[in-house]
Amino acid sequence: MSMSNKIKYVMGEQNKKRDDLLTALGISYQAVSNKFNRDSFSGADLIKIADCLGVKLAFVGDDDKKIVAFSMSDIEKK
Image 1 (tube, rainbow, N blue to C red):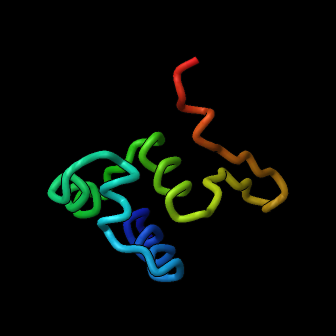
Image 2 (cartoon, rainbow, N blue to C red):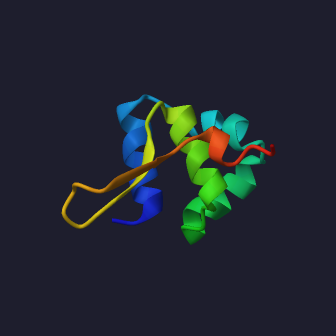
């Protein structure tokens, strides 16, 4: 499943619309549409989207035992 489809699935589960992502990402509707069409989300985009959708972004190991979660503090300038 593509990243775009995963995001769309979670958006449906959370009753979120693309307008919610516009605000979270701070970009235009066209820019969000391009990201979905090209399946081209940066790591920072994914963290912001996860935060907007109320979920955690994580890398999960093949054995489902190794999990590394990411949050907004990982991309904020210090």
